[in-house]
Image 1: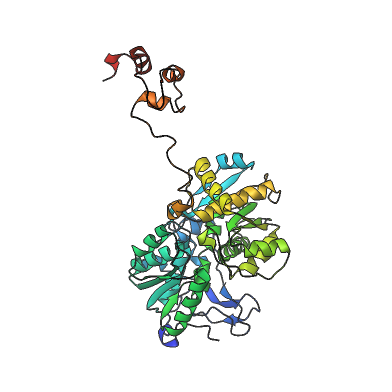
Image 2: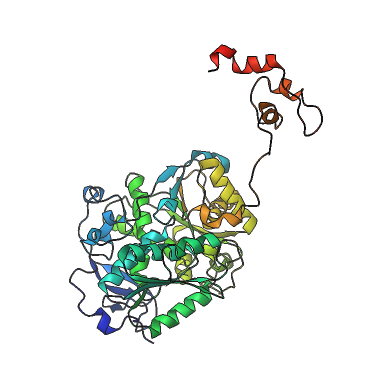
Amino acid sequence: MSTSVLTPSTTSGTREGAFGNATSLSCRECGHLVDLGPHYACPECFGPLEVAYDFPQVTHAEIEAGPRNIWRYKALLPVPADIEESPNTEPGFTRLLRADNLAAELGLRKLWVKDDSTNPTNSFKDRVVACALSAARELHAKVFACPSTGNLANAVAAAGARAGIKTVVFIPSNLEKPKQVNSAVYTENLVAVDGNYDDVNRLASEIAGEEEGWAFVNVNVRPYYAEGSKTLGYEIAEQLGWRLPDQIVIPVASGSQLTKVDKAFRELIELGLVEDKPYKVYGAQATGCSPVSVAYKDGVDAIRPVKPDTIAKSLAIGNPADGIYVLDICRRTGGAVEDIGDDEVREGILLLARTEGIFTETAGGTTVGVLRKLVETGQLDPELETVVINTGMGLKTLDAVSDRVGPAATIEPTYAAFAATGLADSPHHDALRSHRVGDPELTPVAPDIVETTLGPKESRT
């Protein structure tokens, strides 16, 4: 089995410091070390590889003096020291919002929303793609590519355009239309595949094995790509005043984001940048694609692949690569993995929008809905400080709620018509409604009522 898709001819001449403070790739199963390069599977046991580092001493002041994007943490990422000089979308340092209204609705004492919908292409995928793009450059890739459930395709297409590299993205043909458009505006090379994400991913792996010089962000440069998710954990800790939350709820697709946020927290502790304290990690899935949640509830370690059937398409990975590691982390930290149905996903979207003014996509609706379920079932302590991650913008999944929202009423352009809706707060509301005769026609409002409501004519100029 080949674990390198970029051939030696395209990877020769990698410059010194191309991967920053990274020292090697380490197998997550057996610990075998592999030289830095376009490798993603251990040659000894075929386990997944991740980046290993020799970190220098890093201070709060050094990080805070950096740019207001993920490159403020470049010393902790597999990127060169001059990363800011390379054209990229500069994602990260998104807002962490105190969510008191949502907390009150759910019965939580203190809740924060990490809102990654404000990234350049409106999802957290801009973070991981920026790190993957750096690796692709350093490895002299000719094509920047990915299989995707939508958000990743958007991020890869935009980053490739910004970097001036040929970009090809592959998506399931039944993907939400807004996500297709959000990729196609950045690249002419959008390929729709008849099948689900797992089918698309298998095709991408086959293409990567046949085509020379293609960097598939979540295949042959996956170890570098995945490290971008650590920046979510770094930012949350920094924005909380360099401390860790007590509890955090994270959506699970492949499971990589959850595992890397945990890795970020552990690295910050090891570097002395935050106090060492217990924290609980919770995973959120949609019931129509919940293999990790099922395994957690069954108390088993094996993840049984499923065929996705859910509106949460960005989480619809039936065979999650990092599923077993999600189980390990949630069990180790005292958290859990939970799932909810599609109707609860929709309710989660509306709940976050109507309490905190954040329009999330279906992945965020899943995470908020799971948060509510965790509280209701007693799996999450409402007295502990909690963070929930919103990974994307709701404009990408409009179909999920379009039949549940709309005008409260359609009326004639008169105050009397408005008053008849029952929405008016005016003390003359009842008087105005008394003039209604028949349905839906309204009689004119008496002049004295109009004058009393608006004031003297001479004052209305």
